[in-house]
Length: 70
Image 1 (tube, rainbow, N blue to C red):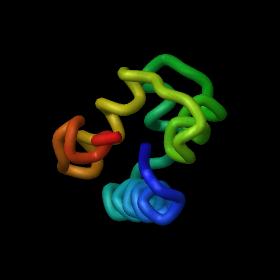
Image 2: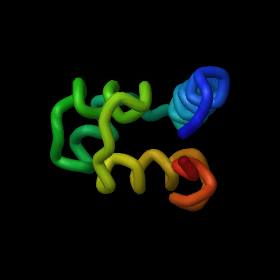
Image 3: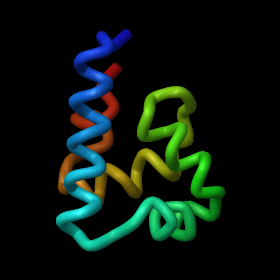
Image 4: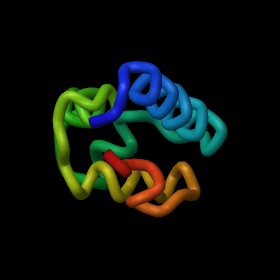
């Protein structure tokens, strides 16, 4: 399980990369066909959703395993 610092670092990385790609959490939610709150929960590490995780990994230009290694 990831430490709190790792989770916060991953959360900030995802939010920064979304901003750089000029994408929003709403955009990720529409692509994954889920609610925006589900995207928020996945980014915060409270829930897991493979579709959302894959879309966020693509936006971050990382592989699924690099981003969600825990």
